[in-house]
Amino acid sequence: MATKHEVSALQQARSAYRPKLPKAFAGGASVACVERERFEPATDAARIHELFPHTYGLPVVAFEPGAAALPPAVKAGVILSGGQAPGGHNVIAGLFDGLKSLTPKNQLFGFKGGPSGLVDNKFVEVTAEFLAAYRNTGGFDIIGSGRTKLEKTGQFDKGLTHCRALGINALVIIGGDDSNTNACLLAEYYQKIGAGVNVIGCPKTIDGDLKNPFIETSFGFDTATKVYSELVGNILRDANSARKYYHFIKLMGRSASHIALECALQTQPNICLIGEEVAARKLTLSDVVGQIVDVVVKRATAGKNFGVVLVPEGIIEFMPDIQQLIKELNEILARNAEYMKNLPSQDDRRQFLFSKLSAESGKTFNILPQAIQTQLVLDRDSHGNVQVSRIETEKLLADLVEDQLRELKAKGAYRGSFSVQCHFFGYEGRCAAPSNFDADYCYSLGFTAAALLGANKTGYIASVRNLTQPATEWVAAGIPLTALMNIERRHGADRPVIRKALVDLNGKPFGKFAASRESWAVDDAFLYPGPVQYFGPSEVCDQPTQTLRLESIP
Ligand code: FBP
Image 1 (cartoon, rainbow, N blue to C red):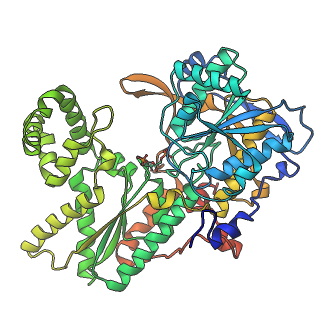
Image 2 (image 1 turned 45 degrees about the horizontal axis):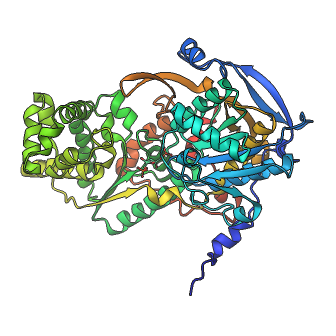
């Protein structure tokens, strides 16, 4: 019978893995911290300067082998923020080991359950014994995570009281674009009031949308896309064996389509939709359905009534007609919330909404299957807005494709068969055991955060670059968070935020996909990447993602 402490054979073997570090850290985190270029945000520099007078204009700092200035004693608190991403535990391990390499007296506390742990004073001390079971494992369960936004002065003040009570003089926030935006606000505030608490960010998210010239990729993207690609590859092989189903696979990734694009590059399915392209070409829902139908008809002519379609989670938000519909629905829902609540049935609510829509949006609403219409009426977020991410886009597209094929069949323009299986891959990949790449990258990010704290820095995000080279050649640095900011309109106000990186339609990953997709549509060039490998030849175990590889080509 399984006991509480029993672990799998892989967990046991994996716990012995020693993550690799950039060679600058071969002797520990106490290394020379060299000031490099100063640089400004790409846009809105004057406004960002005004908003962040105490942390604006810092230089990039790089870590190089060499003598360090005497580091201050560090008592740090670490926070995991937002969705899980493989490797989070190794960031904490790298941070812990890095801090201890500065001096064994340094201490690390973990705030539990995400940013709210700091505000509510829920913490645990991270010790070597406590950490041991979590090294090289997936998940964020070591201290938990949460989506509370740390953005209000009241929260910052409460957090400071708790830091002072514990003697904490540094915080490391591990999160995506929003969490690092908040790390920037927190660093500025603590600097302004002379709190004596340094703040460092770390780039996390499976979505891959926190990247820029200094952050080549966010951690977790590598493992998650490898897990999804394994699953997609398995389904491709099943499709090719049974030759009777179309599989519509929705892939997580919120707005950006990086995950879908990476999986497409790894597996070469028949169709992969890219939200950013849909937006750039202003493709409506019917246009996208039409494109899928064209491929299905072509394949049927070649005797192939099977295939695989990859659908990024955020696709429909990029369609102009759906954008307009959602905007109108949000307005109608906001203006008539009370009235709608009192309507006797869902059907009445749907009818009421329909009567208030513009003619164009009414048409779009009418195209949607009834189940999706109901979803639009029912599922709202805490602001009362439609929850687009809850919409089962893969089913929606499959249904609409089926409708069109039926019409074509009636006209004699299509003679195939169309039978569908739908899937959604998301949670399957977020807590996978980190690949060698993520295990090393995360450990290096944590170590870099420790080095930044050892150099008494605040308002920086840990950066590790040159990632397509062996880990020893990776370059560890600190990038000023303010340099990543721009001003965006959010919830009706102009706010400083870190820009989300969407798929670049002029970039090499999309370029390679776009050049190949026509042949993938009909020729079946499927690739089967298989599961993430942790032990074995380097060409199988240590490969970075296609996205990273292609983006690193000059
Ligand atoms: P983060 O941006 O916080 O890393 O989260 C990534 C993600 O996995 C998205 O791909 C997905 O849309 C979202 O989290 C789902 O999270 P939740 O289950 O909390 O809604």
